[in-house]
Length: 376
Image (tube, rainbow, N blue to C red; front, side):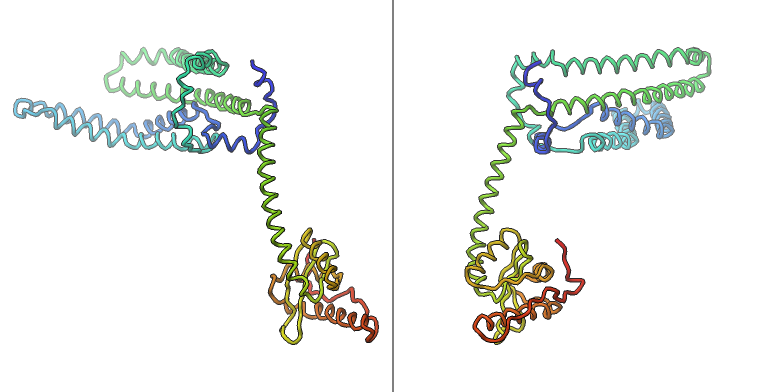
């Protein structure tokens, strides 16, 4: 066993499994597919046994009844053979359909359906005689031989036990009339097929379990593979960070032109920031010129401080305006009263700072409707 296989002690990541599926490498059980095809075929044969009997009787009757035409028809028996072949094909069609359907649906039970164009491509390494020689004596090949031997042993064992238990019935067939012998043989063969089908269930279960653990062991990753995948992921993260950085630079440039036009900045106090603009002579209602949370909120506050835009700490109102109003739109009518109190405070504060009027009273309990209350 190589050092690489010894180092495969880490469970496969989601990315590794997705890459394997793209290459067509998924969990598969060949015995599950063949078992389902066999079982569906046997069920259809048993279900349609009476139809087969009638068709066979019709074939014998038609064919032997038309032997007299040998002397009169030069093309005999070609037309009659075509007729028999077509009739038999039609009656076998449902069996073929069920077998194909079972083969198509079996992947959904184990590993899931997966189609990959890479798995059907030509691989030059398959022509390497050294690799082929190694594969002949690999652990996987040994396990396949063991599984095949187990299947043969089970089937032969079932055949021997069944034959021994039904030995008297089988011998008795020679003493029965022709029709009774046919029915007796049909009964014995049907029972044998059913017993074989039941025994195949254990083979299928063994193959499914073995294939599952074999696949889980095969897809395990080495420490180096984990490191390489982490580097690749981090590289993608760096690209994403660069894109976000470029987007944030554009946003900061836009905030630098819109925030200075605001009348007041309502904050949360640090998580949210909403820039509201209101000109009584031009605007019908207060509008949002900028809003943000986190780093964007911090940048809005910095621009506001640099441009002497007043900050008003009102957490409930900040969250309400942020979650209900888009940039460039007027605030909701239900928030008019609260925003009017804030704008009134800012107006009175400016007058006080200019030596006009008294210091306004800060209103912390602003009226916010229950349906406009948002929690962080």
